[in-house]
Structures are given as structure tokens and as C-alpha cells.
Length: 195
Image (tube, rainbow, N blue to C red; front, side):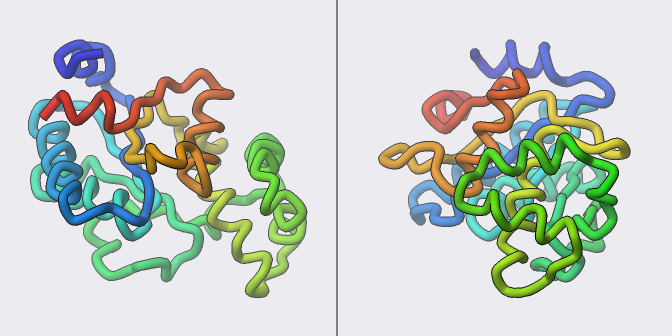
């Protein structure tokens, strides 16, 4: 998919594009992520951008969008105070604002992540210890992709992945949820060509 085809297909009212990826972004790649965020925001009118507010790729992509269209940037956070410096400047939705007892599909799909599957039910039941809080990150990643009763699902996902160990960790979980729900995704092997 080239850039023009992407814009034509996805710059529509209500469409949401995920911009996210690995926390570890080599110095040489950081500018490219920010540049893509800027290019996407300046080349579109309607598209909203969603991030998980993590350090690394999420931060660099969001930084680019924020420079051009902060009103079209939305972050889903695992808890209210997560990296909250600057969160007031754009639309932040903490996981505490989601009634997970009324979101069985989010809970079910969060359990795709085998490392935290046994913690999901504990977190949903109210546990907030140092172990169950790990579930919040995976649930947040699921919500970013499929949405909730009150949060629209994503229409497309743009990721910065570790190409030597692809689709691992939280980024891999989000990519997997997207694929299982027919949300198209690309990684830097595609979008670097757009720059």
C-alpha cells in the first residue's frame, strides 16, 4: 500500500489509526517515527490517531501528530497517572474509565496474551497489586484495537516493531488482536517508504 492509497482509504470521518510500537527505538529511527506522525496529521483532515502513551514508539509517533493536530490525538492509558505529563493536552482515556465487567469481549481477547491470561480476571475483579497491574497494560492494548461500548474500534494499525523478534510483548499482542479482528496493520517495512 502506498501513502496516497492509504490516505484515500482511511482519511474519513470517525476513522481511527493506531500509531504505536516498541519502547526500544534506536536513535537512528526516532526521527522517522516523529516525521511519519507529522506527515499523517498534515496530510489528513478527518483521521484520528490513537496511542497507548508508552515510552518509545508511541511517544515519537504522537510527538509528530501533536505538532500538527493535537485535537486528533487520543491516548488509552492503563491507569490515570500513566506518564501523565502532557496528557491534559490531548484526549486521554484511562482504563479506570472503562467498566470491564460490561466488556466481556475485551476481557476475552485480552486473554490471548498467554503471559498475563491468568491475571486478567484478577484485575477485572478489582485486584491492583504489582502483579495484576501487568494485566492493565494488555487490557489497554486490547481496548486500543477493538474499542469498547463507548470507544470506537481502530480501523488500521501502523506499528514500529522489532523486526528481529517480531510480534512480541504488548506490541505483538496489539498486532495479534488487530489481525484476529480484521484490522489491517503495517510495520516500518511499509511506512518507511512513505517518507
